[in-house]
Length: 549
Image 1: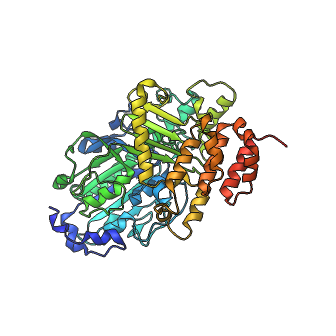
Image 2 (image 1 turned 45 degrees about the vertical axis):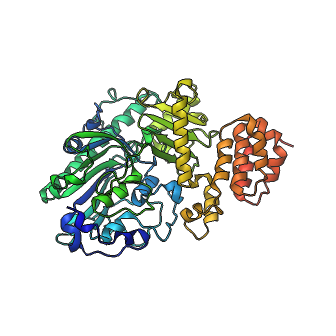
Image 3 (image 1 turned 135 degrees about the horizontal axis):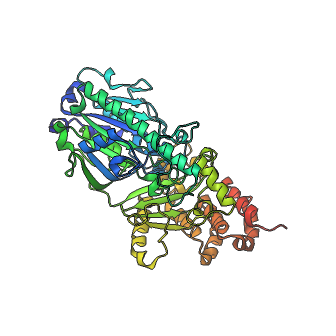
């Protein structure tokens, strides 16, 4: 069905501004593609087995399509997650991992709707963008609150995004609200205290999920009424885990796993994966980095080689992943550096700033009643593990078995029986960071300084500008709290690269008061380091642990 469009010169699309291809040349052989997405929504749906969820429209969609059990948003917060979607690149590779930041792409790269528009698709977005990447020219035919596929030319295929905000974090705490779900029946995760405030927030979240389901139903009805249901591949997904604290913003499975349902009409079933079927489920691992190449593949457009994801359907379907990856950078006003990986059963988390507590004060997060009561109970000494963990410094490594511990509260990183699993996931994560040239090991200001007028991606892929191996080695040592590594950290204070010196200082701070005081003279000298990021790190270490005099 699609062979006739594969010779249209898609190689040109991978290397700069895509050429315009007339819609009439391609429209008749390709499906419309519709993304229905909602905010801050994990797999708390009826079709995912949640007994409290009332989601008849999504349950029906799942009965007509394929439901993915293991879909990660790669980022546990909206802007970096949407940046992943629009680019097919990991934000850690483009320098766009920090919440509400702006960086350019290299001049040879584009956002994926630009490739679709060049191939004749009418592309609309209603209406949230929230990208941490500067738009390289016109991305959408229409991106607004009134954008609609009906504005396309006759016979022209469309790609449309419809985004619903009713489930957003801000909506689960909006008061007054008359609850429809019984707070006594909701499941409180093991990491949350079981209080009336927490139960109310969770019940209100389920109320909002039901409201969202109604909105989804209206879009599907509109599609059917227009006679387009049998011509349109429909995706439904959430943009990351729920807006409750320790889901949103944290790269656990609870913050990264989202529902994903794909319905493919009969006329285009050959574009689906081999395990596609009405009401079917799949254990294939997919992430947001895979969405852009998948949509291009469904449209008959070969994904450019620079995309880091792989299509999970269509003629350019890639091999399934063995792992999915997640990350946490600066969240609003608080910085952090966390990376995670899953094989579908186990989740491994690497904390590179373990001295920072999980629950750093983020003003927006503290507007949620659950956050406030949780912190108040901790301060009053009225909590016990695992509810206390969120307000305490992090271990360097975490390992969780989702099959036995869905809330990820039993850390198996030190368990002898899980050493092989730990090492395997540790290696997979390290390889991913090295292969993608993870820019998170540069402080945000230092990343921008090194990039200068270039895209951070370009700088990050130039070893002479970003000696990843040396910086990463120091960060690995610094963040493990190993006392025997102190001498290496001291030597690192003399390194030529500012980021190596930064991590050497941070490593002494992570080791605590004795290490800082033993090296107080060196840290005091670092207050005059040529790099501001090193000066600041030294001041923080001395301010927290140094002695007077």
